[in-house]
Every structure is written in C-alpha cells, then in structure tokens.
Image (cartoon, rainbow, N blue to C red; front, side, top):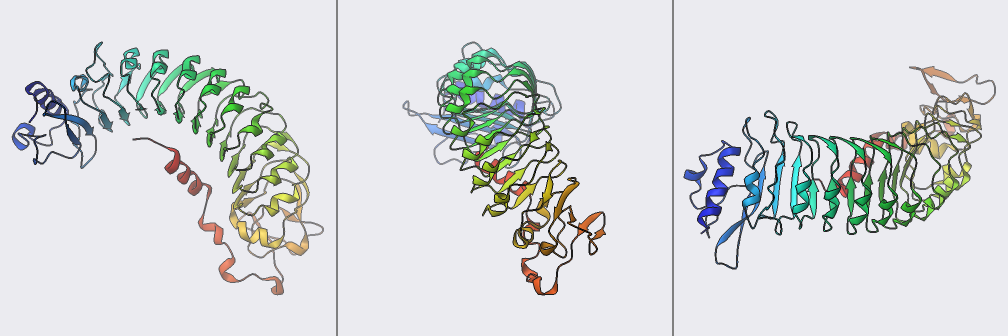
Length: 432
C-alpha cells in the first residue's frame, strides 16, 4: 500500500497529464504488492513497509500520452522517493514552464530528470534546479527554453550527463562548468551561445563526449582542453571560431571523432592532428583552411572518414592517404589541390562514390589507373582522349585486363557518412 498523501499526489498528476484511462478506477492500488501498475510507473518498497513511486514516464505509448492542455506538473517534486521522471513529446500545444518549488521533497532522491521534444515548454531554466542535489542525468533537449544557462546548474556535482541541446539559450557558457568533476557527457549544441569556450572546461577530466556545435561561439579551442585525456567525441561545427588550434591538441589520445566543419578558420591545418592515433572521423570542411594537407594525416591508421571539402588547400595529396587501411570516405573536393592523384586502382575501387575530388582543376589521374565506372571527379593526365562525361561526372575507362570482379565494384556505395554518425550517436548519446 501507499501513504494517502503520496497516493493522492500520484493521481492528481495522472489526471492533470493524461486522459488515457480513468486512473483511479483502473488502478485503485497502483503500487500494491502483486498488483499491475501501468507502463511508465514504477514503485519500490521503503523502509517504512510502504510502496513509493520511484519512476514516472510520459509521452508515447506504451507510456501514458499527454493531453493537449497538459502543463508541467510541479507536483512531481512532492513525491519524496521519486528517482526518475521523463516527459517526451508531452507539452506540445499549451505553453508551460518548468516550476520547481523552493523545498522539493525529491531533492535527495531524484537522479534522472528528462524533458525532451516538448515544443510548448518555454521560459528560462529555473535557478532552483540546483536544489535537485542528487541529479546524475539532466536532459532538457529539443524544447523552447531561452535565456542564459543559470550558473547554479553547475552546483549539481553528481551530474554524469548534461544535455541542453536544441533550445534557444544564449549568453556565455558559465565558467562554473568546471565544477562538474564527474561529468561524462556535455551537449549544448543547437543554441545561440556566444563568447569563448571557457578555460575551465579543461577541468572536466572524465569527459568523454563534448558537443558545442551550432552556436555562435568565437575564439578557439582553449589550451586547457588538452587535459581531457578521456575525450572520445568532440563536435564544434557551425560556430564562429577562428583562432589557432592549441599546440597540445595531439594530447587528446582517446579522441576518435573530431567534427569542426563550418567555422571561419582560414589558417593552415595543424600537423599535430597526426598524433591522434585513435581518430576515426575527422571533419574540417567549409572553413577556409589554407596551405597543404599535412603528411602527418597519413599516420592516422584508424581513420575511416576524412572531410576537407570546400577549403583553400593547395599542393599535392599526401600519398600515404591511399595506404590508410580503414578509410572508406574521403572528400577533398572544392579546393586548389594539384598534381597526379596518388591513389591506385584498388583504392579507387574500394571507395567508389565515397571518394570526391571534384573542384580541383589542377588535379589529374594517371592514365594507368583509370577505372571504368569509378567517378573520381578529376580528369586524366595528358590528352584525356578516353575521358567521357556522364551526367556531369567523370567516368574513366578501364582496360579489359584490369577489370575488377563485379562484386567488388561499388561495395562501399552502400555506406555513407551518415552510417558512421548514427553509430556515434548510438554509443555516445545518453538522451533518455
């Protein structure tokens, strides 16, 4: 059985949120031993020999769906044993805000709090969220929250994952972020955050995932980020960053995914990237990089995807890129690269359509390596008598004696960069 006050609070929440059932009639004893509760409700026995609500989920079936006029139920903070609360695609019609009372009963019990894809959830993140002292996972993603990130949120020193992505938050990233010493994942992407990345971010020694993409951040990567020895995933794309990379960028020895497209960098690529031996994906497109592609990039033996398109890179392509054993996607298009393509026929066959070299007018392919049906985006060196255009793409003929087995042609066409990104998000996103 439950205490009368907790019983009444639970049904008050359910009746205000969902019309799926006549909750009191259908579940007169929701937490009773041996009784069947509804999906989305979990109860646990307490030391007082009573059952207590430990989890409430709302949103999509089989969990209770939300009424069109549902608003955020601040009563959840009156459930003294609540450990997890999830609201997915719940507040979509009636505008509502997050309201946390000054003395929430869940301050020492609530560990996971998720409000995701609630487009009618608006207002600022309340500073009283700092009263939820036991929070380990806080997800406020894909809502309509605005205003600055309250510094008080960084007093939640038990946080393992913080996701405030896809809102309209603005202002600077508070320097207090360095207080989250056990944080594993930080996602502030798709907001309007501005200013420099704070130096204190280097104090997040256990951090594995960092996503600050699609903001208005300026400056550069702080030198202190070289301390993040456990960082696996870093995304800084679509900002206004333009400063030099820190000289200790190569010390991020756990880094596997570095995504920094669409920043006005306009500087040479750092050779220190060649020290990131675990790197699997490197994306630096649309950023105005100049100079040559460093030969050290050929030392990235685990690299599977390299995107350097739409920059101002010059010189020749390092021959070692064609020897990388795991690479399946290479985009060097829309640069000013020149010379003879240093890739053999086997490399061209293996990448197929995942190789894009178009838009480099001074780049050409050796006639002995031309392949029928392989679109490399550049012309053959010399007269090019056997070169033909098909649908605007270059198709290079192959001698009959060099023709590859049918099953090996275009194998990698079934794959794309999106497959890799999906795997990344599956592993590193803790969105609840």
